[in-house]
Length: 321
Image (cartoon, rainbow, N blue to C red; front, side, top):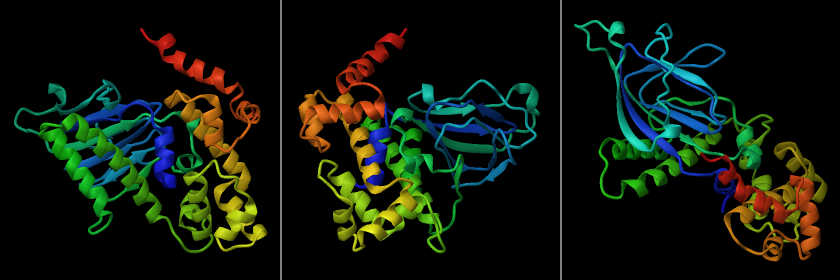
């Protein structure tokens, strides 16, 4: 996998959720904070996104808003419209179309109200597997509609909206796939829009730096390889010292520290998503000794890999109804 795909595959848990909602003015909807990432897309009309702090954000047709940390927010036809606290929450639904009307007291009998159609959704992301690529994002990612920009994102939005509006055979398989595509296209669009000049820092700069991006690809492609700073630097066409400085400046940690962290993150995913023996997991992430792997894993997660697997598998059963 490439770095972005790998990060999403590691952090994702459960299935994404989405809903197509038709609003009739006046309307205002409050969305509480959630332990997941969410998005809002304006398919028709206009509205305002109202964050807990700061000025409201005007949204028009084609605008995409991504909230990577599940931050509480509200949508409304006007910043002055009272908010409804009865959540229209995609986290607890499947894939559907909804029709939301304002309370009778808010609408004049002779005024049907302007119509706004939104596409909302949520992705369950495990905070225990948080990758700095996502934690580097702002709390609100706004991708305004601009002619000719991000055609893949626009195509995914159109396809997803069509499936929710007119479900057909295979929709239960098509919609989750489109939601996964949409998440990747949103992130790709945001990274593409970051400035590439001056002295940019962070993961947007790391993924656009040929040397660092190549090293990240090598590490993610084969975390079990016995990588050294010299080898990674040579493959990137840099000296050991120059490569180490550039990697640490952009990624936020030295090359081998990131390699170890990613190995342990990969190991945790393998422990939960497969029944592979510990020896196999250890070899997959570059440890010929199960003892050495267990020590490294315990330093990262505070528990032995076998116990981690048992605890995490038992957790859903202990929290259910």
